[in-house]
Image 1 (cartoon, rainbow, N blue to C red):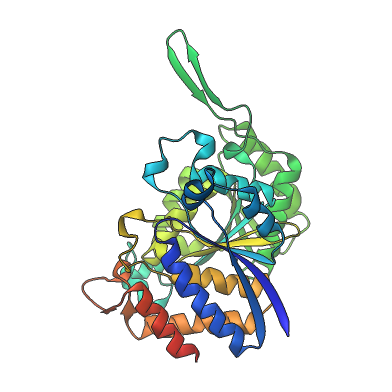
Image 2: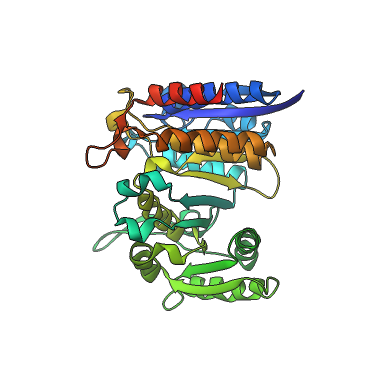
Length: 359
């Protein structure tokens, strides 16, 4: 029997609730398809601060490195905002990405027909949306040096450095173009080349890589225009290639096209080694413990894990199809309720409905 080792990082806020549902569903699917999943839960983010005093303990890193995949729920809580930067949950997340060299973040955004009314936009603008944001994840302004805060004669000055090398740009561009070959053969590279030197290099290197993929249609947009176009005409996009900062912003904008950020999964991949699969949404501490969170983004992240990390494509497809069936039947967590329509269910009830579909 095939066996896969998964490091579970429930994290903070609604993380433990959606992790519990996902764990149960994955256990059921593994039995159905005759493979074994070995789970090891580890502290991460705020939960690790409480247990170990730091957001990303070395024992968690080692467990991640020794696994076949990492399944992360959510991290963060405003109560940690006054801690020194290096001790906050978000720093733990950045360290996870850099430690595993997770340079490629893949965020699919696809409209589910039964949820078009839940979108912030009119149905005719979103009913054909099927795009992927490919975000560089281990460089750019979040990791660039120098950075910091210094005292000056006139007050305090804070600074960060946006930096990319040719190789960092080339490897993420390769991912985007390869993915586009499997889709509609279009890549839109998003930058700010009219004012940023780093974006000028980004554009130059992307054009060079495109010469290896002559069947792919490459276009360019400045990030401010791309943000507008995602709202104006989102169906024009197939694969969006962009840097760490711009991808962080644009992927959240794209998330709302689906009606809720609670619907979107993501995969963060390295050249080799375990990938991290996580929902796009945050920890939502305001609704934690109320059993009203939407577990679908984490479930879809688990489906991506099954297909990408384990090559268990049929198992991943079955999970995705079961989720679509439940949504088509009108079941909704509170974030997806629109105009009072739908059958409102809790986080755990959504898991129970899925269990019924998968048995």
